[in-house]
Image (cartoon, rainbow, N blue to C red):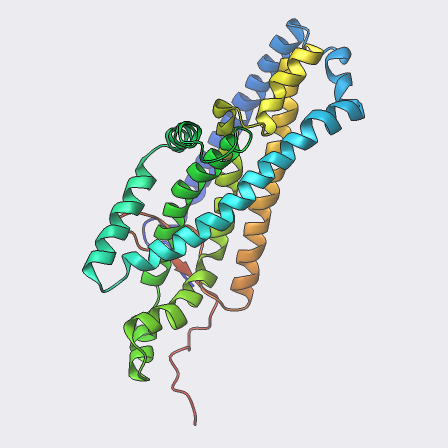
Length: 301
């Protein structure tokens, strides 16, 4: 079991102080919510006629559901492509070939440093000016490109961090049975790293799903874009934004719960997991496991 070596368990005074600070924080949040509701009511945004359109099938089937489908389509394809990108360049950063390792490092660090929105806009104008896709496909392709390049770079760092967290004996065991370094990396270390990284990878889905909202800038008709359409049609822009925000919160909360469930199942089986993997040039992963302490007992033959 991993445990923190940076902080001691809080004593009675510290727990009382934390409880008091928590209470103050809750009061401030409730005060902010009360103020927000008061201002919304003052502007007439809490009136029943502002919210009644969301009780009809027209708004949902003509606006919200199609926008949600577009959001999920872009997020799903981006996740698949980002996973492939991450595996390729993550292994490339661990390659023993200096050229491959250098190229992979440059690619990952570059796309991890550039904002997603800039990559979406650049891809959109690149595709539009060169007629790469039809005009109705360009926004979708640009959104997927930006999400793939950025999140693929993050996945590559997660893979490098996950493989770096494995015991050195894993690689030594592969070499001892005649495997090459590349075969050991692909056949022994990568499967274990993916298992350990699974909770962090599922959590990354939340980032991908939220970042699809940036597609509004390049006219991609995802979920967030529908708030202006509904607002123009029904004159309820603020309620539309609130409803769409609730939809995003529900979906992202469900993904977060899935990540937590996957992590608990892996720990219950005694598998090592990376609950909070860090990415960076010298990043390492904090591995947690529920394996018993006597794992070093010699095997009996």
